Length: 299
Image (cartoon, rainbow, N blue to C red):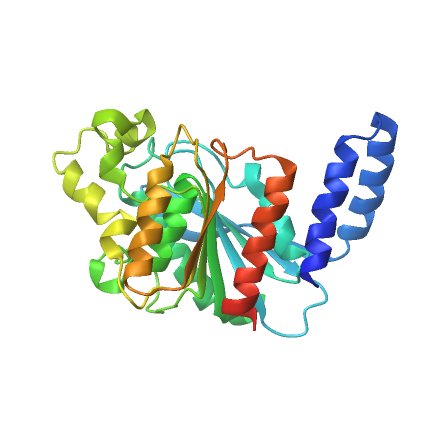
């Protein structure tokens, strides 16, 4: 399926938002009746066990796939202390409409385990995808990780942290999958910056808790700590008025990747807050994302 189909879907949703209630119901029902036959969903597969918790993922596949498909791996936001994969299913639609497979990931939140647990889980999810690629039709040469806010941070760490960092030691298997690209929606890039000072955020303080070595851990799970020349292509979308994750986090990542000549792009949303961007800006962002992926992953 083509990029134009994805953009058409978003245009349709924008149109529905301005239609009457009856028209919304009729058009949405017609779309749902068609799309439900296009995809196969396998929910709540256990990919990892930690702290007595079974961690789950959901797998979405196109029924029309005739071989391994590019695979979109998504980590939800919520400041590492909230959120759920179920609340973010609609974020998978643009990729499913292009014929991709999608994996929606649950990870340990702060009330279950403090940092760096969420980072460890995210790496384990990537390894699970590689280990089960044949069964679910994942193309391991085209694995794209993504997320929003804390999920953007987890996508970055999943794609950037090397095995010798020791954060994947609890993961099953010995696969060493490589990420083909990262799509970062306003993710945190410097965790320590959020623990104190003018940028202090309560969610970051909660995630690190009262760990005696919190600054060391913050450094260990910060994407800015892992910038080097062999990183996957990375595109970031961030509002320049974001009150939750400072826009400067995106700028520093962009500059750092430029310095080591990693292919990357920064899509700035003018006056954009923490997500909830206007429809025209969402269309622009997704247009940039799929052009980026077409150039660096799919082709």
